[in-house]
Every structure is written in C-alpha cells, then in structure tokens.
Image 1: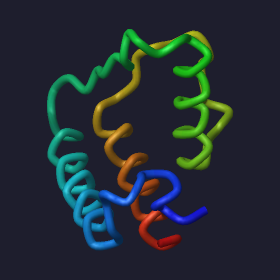
Image 2: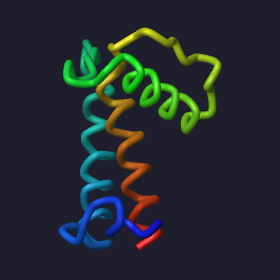
Image 3: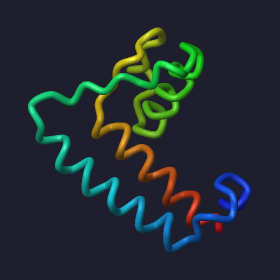
Image 4: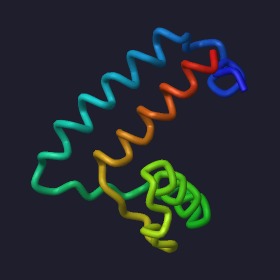
Length: 93
C-alpha cells in the first residue's frame, strides 16, 4: 500500500525519510536517559495497546517478550519502531 493511502498526500518520501532519521536520532539519545518509561495514550483501548506492543516486539524479533495488558513501554523503543515503520512507508511510496 503506498504511503499516500496511509498518510494522505501531506507527507512525501523525503518527509518520511527525514522523520525516520530524526526519530532514530532521538531514540539513540533517549536510550541513555535514566528513565525510559512511556505510557501509551489513555485514548487507546487495551486491545490497541496490545496490538501496538506486539507489533513492536515482533519487529524487534522477540514476540515472546510481549506482555499483554501492559500500557507502559520504553520511549526509545517506540521511536525506533516508528522510525522503521516510516522508512517502510517511504520505500513503498
């Protein structure tokens, strides 16, 4: 599916690649913080949280580490995952 179908026509390949690069940089910096706790949005259902964290763990190669029912994850992990998804979307555009 082209990224325009997912993101609309507002972000082009260059924008997606830049956002991915910035998220990778931020992830690297955040991973060195003393606390990396990140609560997923309150507006998400628990099923949405479980789906998202399972997708992250699967992308990371360790779906067996998925813990259903948790809303907390690590900020740098979310950034790394989203950066990878943005890169994937840019390659599809």
